Length: 320
Image (tube, rainbow, N blue to C red; front, side):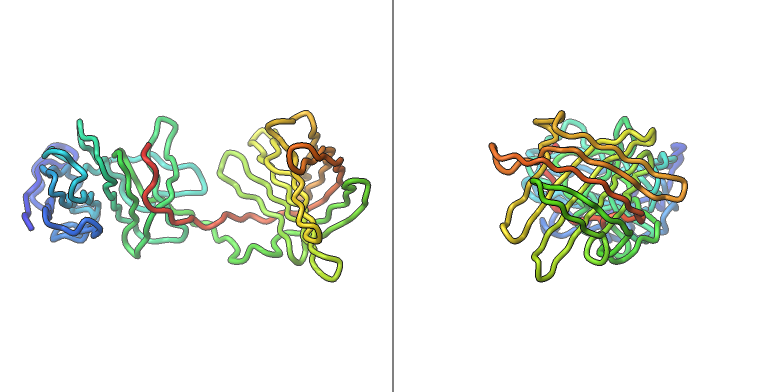
């Protein structure tokens, strides 16, 4: 392990407490983010750290807890890599908040032939996620692994990354959330299903709009039947259907509105009053396979609860 002192804080002044740890012999699958100085008190250095890493691979660690793990063979030749703490990162859109410092990971002119691992520190909290900075703001990414102090993901390209979390106290269980009822006619047969006790009515609020999901589900001696309705509703109240689907377990058939191919086969209205009661109507043509169609009409009422699905964990994101 070679330890090199890094110079320059946010103002360009020397900062002897900022160090870079280079482990040229580290295992390709091991994140050496906890090097000698990687665990220093967060916010103590704020420096840009650099190191030259070659085809043998290695780990570049920032004293504020970020690190970059380069496996052997990911680089064709030696090049300078850097990690720099961002002085004032922009705030993310609600409901997310910053969960740690943001860092710029840079490798000018380098095309990685294998994924490198970005490791970020975080200060704890529920629903931890990683985000990359774009021209439009922070873009949420599926993270590969979350520990009590770090979050990581593998990439073929670098950029500016930060840990975010959602502090909203969501319900632990999805089934049974909300309430509501749908009365519908499908293929000339009338039916009705409640949200309770097996379905759910939820709002997923990303800050500038929401996704409304109404799942009406019934099981029992008469068989399993569900109607799955999903919409996006903008901050201005514009409704865009995402899914209109009917499933009958007794015959194993899923009938859906082909929203992209036949947008004119679907008419939806949704209103919500000041008390939060949702009312809606649907007049649609549902498709089964490429040729079979049936009419579907419905009226529904519901009262939804706020919910977000927990972040999934996906490793080795595709290139780009």
